[in-house]
Image (cartoon, rainbow, N blue to C red; front, side):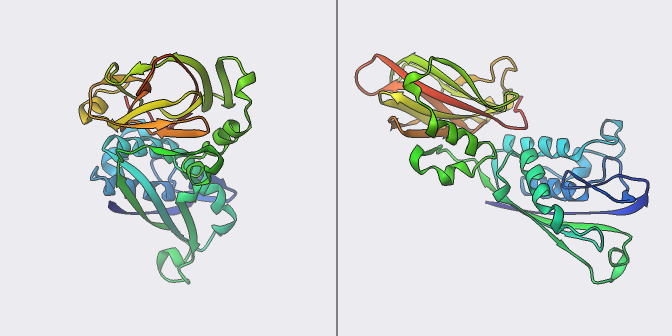
Length: 316
């Protein structure tokens, strides 16, 4: 486990947009900065990078670079979260305190949580945003600017995917903002009446299901695979599927994942788990290596659904 602390402050100026946590707030004054001056997002980025040992926001997105002039800080957070995952960590939780006299943070905190969670690729339940005043003390207390403190926890990427029952998936459904829709689809579908093919769950390629019929393979007959952009939720429709799972080697992650198919194949040590209809297995990129469509006994065909859920940042 790693703990990170982030801090940022910006002063107010007339005629600037006021953006905090990716939310634009109606105000005659905004925050001054090289990008959109989103002090809340910047403090979150600093906490994540610091916990992962990746420096700080100034070294990753310097305010001397034209590339980041006027940049949307949600994009900066997407990039930072991707680098944290590339370094071998998963984001556990983020706790932020925004200190200012005006505006009041509470009316906007839920939207801020949603925007930050979407950019970081985690559930809003893993993010807290609180507003405090400085009781009139100091420059912040006199209304000259905003200060933000953030703490976060990172956990080392787990070797184990998430296994469970679709009928009891509440805990798993909280792990990503699109998982509730994904599991609602899996609960309600009549797969027997559905043809093989692709079914959109969230528009724009954010979340979809691929219903497919595949040939089972013997254990040892296939390499591991891993992805850089999509989480996989594997669900057998008929038949028992044995799935191998392990950890993606760091050199595979460093080499990246092809843009055209988001998949890398490699050899790595694995364990095995049987998954039956009504059960699921979730594999998170880029660290969850897996070998699907295996059989411990007889071969034959397997009908299954694979729900693909897009992360915000790629690993290539």
